Image (tube, rainbow, N blue to C red; front, side, top):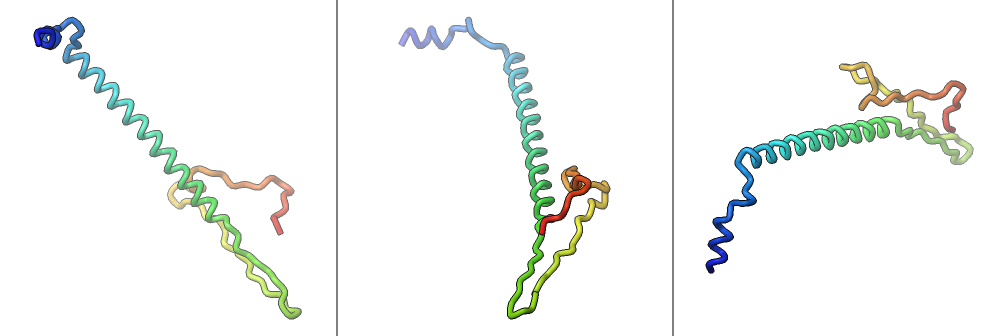
Length: 102
């Protein structure tokens, strides 16, 4: 039990309070910065998902009994009112001369 008392009272490897405070401060700042990056990435991915869902074309056409039945999805993509840009900063343009899918 004597060795335990010597071990407990040994101060050769002691880190001062200022060192511990500095270490925790750096750790907390790093975690905050990391969580901010994760938050921004998640928001951007949700914006990408919203843009993709806005561009789902639900048009269809079929012939039954000599009559053509069709529905044309004419909804256009609207810009964000506040910024005048597409959601999540995505630019949706088609190259010149591109033809729309059938």
